[in-house]
Length: 318
Image (cartoon, rainbow, N blue to C red; front, side):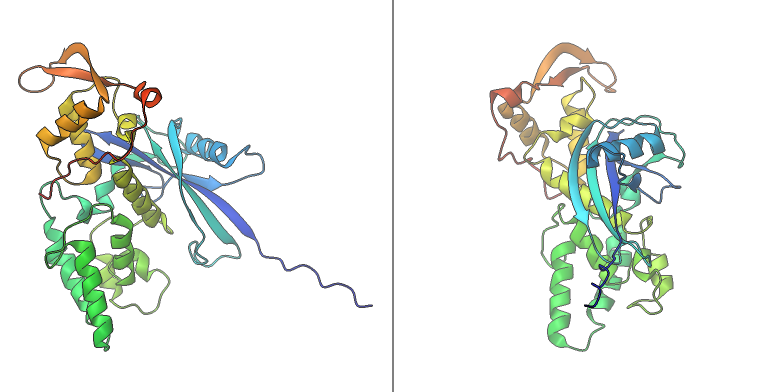
């Protein structure tokens, strides 16, 4: 009898990655390591009691910051996500919300605006000029780069829908789809790594706006932004980013920072009052630059009183 063939060996590694978000001075900030080019991460090890405990251990080791609110974001298992390696790396990502604190640790931890990585996503002052000046010409060239007219038309429609061209409305939640389109079009540096030929030249991709990140960390960050932009519309997670007491204007600015769009002030305040999400503290803030403003706090008992579902924040089209 012939001996049984040895089992097929295929190494699989699990990596834990944190998208840790804070809002400071009306700016959404993300915690990074390795000179702004990476998210806190590390391998899942046998010593870790659970995936989340492993993530907390890596973040605290690399940044000296404890994690508060955390939820699982997405699992990435693309075969080429880690480049040329003997292992198939599965990335399990988490979204964490906190308030910014000084970071340290062994990997140059620091906070940076997430619009440094996605400058086309900030529409609080209207559409960023770089969309028309840089991205639209590049996407137009990509759409026309195939000979088949049906494919050209499909590409143009996809570009218009995602970037709000040709009477389409900008949808702030489509962060990941826009990033993946720019990747496919070769308009960002990550698209040309390790490739001898691309739809556009390496020089064109290298000059595209936005700070690149290692491996697929910018894609993971895009996923976190999209999740948070969607979630603030139906669940009060925004209060995880607020101090214990705050003004309604501070709350509004936080929501606008995350959404990348302005909200309608009267409708926003009416919604907050109707949902009974906050209560007055009886104190006022003198740091408004004008008349003192009332201070509020989040009513955490609201979760025990009733479920909060179907809430839509009044985000304007401005």
